Image (tube, rainbow, N blue to C red; front, side, top):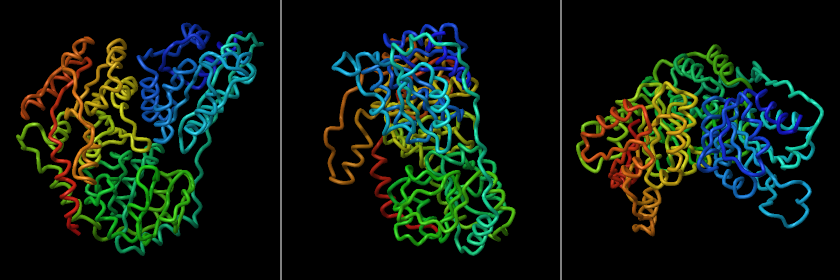
Length: 544
């Protein structure tokens, strides 16, 4: 057999159902084998879109999403999406074709040292230098990618190695280690710390969702009567409707949830990824006692000194601590939750136009089912989604908050719809982020992947304007012009709607869902609310 055939068989062995990417000269042997494979190849319009699709696919399934490119510029176009997956802890395996090994020693057309290029943004980066080691390399790439904390792997496959004839070999057996149960001594230590606390607070990170421990988190909070804040990427790990939920934490400004950290003496960090919300922002004086419950040991940080660390299966650790602890008589921070809930509904009946961010999110929540998925792009709208979108299930509000890359929402929505074809998938994006990967509208239509793309249109880089106004009182070079976004959508064969009054948003959203095709909604947004929020948080008086 050829090495390319063995290579694809190894991916089949890993349970890969889809590969996202673009064919090229140096990956033609792999592309030919894929014609006879059970793996579906999704041809994208840009390699960055392919990487983002694989990124979200991996995040939702817990199994590595796969993207493929050719050498040189094809491979470098993968970089942003691969880095996003790696820093957001989404399992991903990226493949790139490469020049033949016979011309790597000299100046050569489109040749680039891809292994070293990808090494800083992956957990594992390697080149196949011998056809016989294909099974080991593929197995290691997936093992590294999917192991906690998950991330990206990169495989560079030179064209002459792909063509090489080898004796028949078999893929390696897929094995996955089970997380250990934390020792009883650590469980007892954590229970004692929580019992002795006056104002304990739980901060749940995306590791809770990756571990499938959302139900255990809710049981833990209910049993001990503890308030739970989540990071942006853990929204929905506890339903917002649950009385113990405080919403998301992560803004650098002092928000309502920050009031809970001000008062807390013990913070129970569960599945917490430091890359999302640095400890110096919530533990500036280093006066919190920290209980660390995670699958991996804590990162070394002067603002994150652990009093009790429980390393192992997160769900079992939470249940074990709950079983050995006494519930509190009253729920700490109940007044804080009430203040947050009042703010969420404050603009439910607002009729101002352009539409306020709070109103857009209120209306969006009303038309979506609890299991439907919102994927946020990066921009000012991301801050509003993180604060105000009420997620009721894990992995129903996806926010890139590690690498935080613009352009992820539209291709990410395609990846999500392929995983959950029966759910409504909404990409919420700014006009700038939308146009970064808008070419993937064609991919969505060609693959019969209906998604709704809700564009917050302000004709500028709104988040940057917000920061500039906060720091300098004036914006600098953030404005631009947009095409007619409705006509642009229709030019692809998608549907397009423009919201021209606030009371049109709900019926337009409902129509877009009913259309069951790719729909673009051009929604003007009133980002004057950004600075109003800054002023409000600057004057915030904690309600507890």
